[in-house]
Amino acid sequence: MRLGQRTSRFNPASRMLSSRVPSAGRQKFVTTSEQKGDQEDKGDKGEILGGELFPPCCTRSITVIVGSAFFLVTTSLPNGIVDGSAIAQHSENPNPSQEESSLVRALLGPSSLPPATPNSPNQRANPLTVQVTTFPDIQGHWAQSFIERLAARDVIRGFPDGTFRPDAPVTRVQFAAMIRKAFAKAPIRAGADFVDVPTTYWGYTAIQDAYRIGFLEGYPNRVFLPDQNIPRVQVLVSLANGLNLTPTASADSILNRFFQDAGNIPDYALNSVAAATENQIVVSYPNVAVLNPNLIATRADVAAFIYQALVETGQLPALPPTNIATGYIVGYQAPVAQQPDAETLRQRFRLAAPPVTERSRRVTGSGSGIGTPSAFGADRNTAFGGFSFQERTRNSDNSDGGIALGFGVGDASTSVGFEGTVSIYDLLGDTFEDGGISFKVHRIFPNNFAVALGVENFITWGNPDPEYSSAYGVVSKVFPLGGRTEGFTRSVTTSVGLGGGRFRSESDIENGDSSLNLFGSVGVRIAEPIALKAEWTGQDLNVGASIYPIPGTPLVITPAIADVTGNTGDGVRFILGIGYGYQF
Image 1: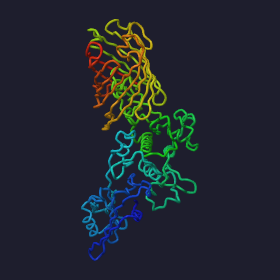
Image 2: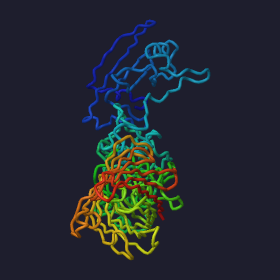
Image 3: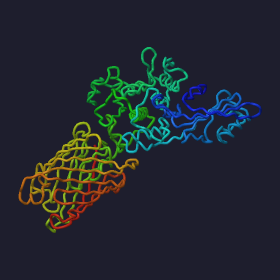
Image 4: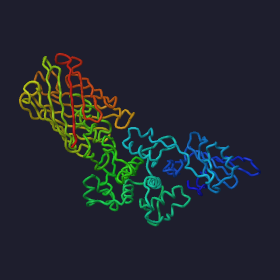
């Protein structure tokens, strides 16, 4: 609340308690108001936005009237208890007497008023608020990184119960308050007198400031509609206009290239949304190819848009390529000058972190298996290489090894990804004389889900093992377990597939029967450098772990034990895989 608007602070429905405090022959009143809050009437104005607003739910206000001085203390502590460290705001008498100050301190505690200095009056302090940079209901949320970083800058805040409510809608006045806090720009025009925004309205200053700096407009007939929920397209238009962004090509060509639903964008917004898209301000979850321009913006949406706008202006750093949120930034590409993304390669042999559409964590092979495929694959110009070793091959005492080189193109999150692999078998025998070419087509969907179709040894030469092709289909899903830290989320990845060739049962292989058989795998990412894995190949059970030993180096080592149950072959065998990848 702005000073001079104290009457708007009171809720008519509140319970009012008054008591007289006698002192020096004058009447002094202490009035408390426990504001229960009404989300329906208040339009969800319970959030503290940029220091503009105290939450109406679960807060307590105390007004202290001392002679000609007016004091207001507000706290959001539980049960309406006023903390002695709360800040007293005074308006009618900016220089209360010593007697008045002593009374306030006696009532509210010694720190309720800032100390006076010999040469200056008491200075007003900001109202007491407890500001946190994370919230329990955004853990593992796709927009967690955007929200936490803006909360750290005090651009956005949570609710008195400690939550953020990322999927709740945002009103036009709430958006104005965020804009006012995020962008410190000089005014480019005078304010506007909106008929539905009186000077006593709690968000009057935020609306005026956002209008003066060019971020917000009103409707015809000087109407603003402050409590109207704001659509996604209006947020993007506001940011593009406020930052003076213009597209470098025709709006239609830009929007049709990025969005499947470009035709749903209103005509007035085409240029602004195109400019916002080119500058990577648009963030679209769960599918970057679908804008949903006319849906009501959620608090997570707005946080993401504002964060990216601050990145565009150079006020905030871009998210690192390994961050899961980069997968939803439209047009995002990892910095060219960076070293290969360790997280991307890491997933070649271990778990993909949620959501699976995170481009920097899309895998070039199995995210849960040791030797069986998953639905995650290489795409977006990723290259990888690997070396494998067996202590001894099945039904022999001879050790052997192999190498594989592969690449990935396309984009699995917006269309399809294509992965191709060239494998060399019998590395310790007739080196390079036996080999095969395999491929996989894969697609990533929302909710940590992926599907793939592939053929191993589609083309062969020499006498590879196996000598036949193995077609398969597989689905994979990542289940976050929570407990996220930067760049790491404990999770479980599962894959289930159906295939022929090497996936058949041992008896069908021995009899030469053509059949299909189930295979699958599960991996548990227990720590940043380790994922434990188990897989059923269709014939035997293998267990192992993927280890990322050197931080910052995209090297993955996967030791494992094959046929731990002794179902096939002639007993347990040690196997080892080493992988390295590069994104160009």
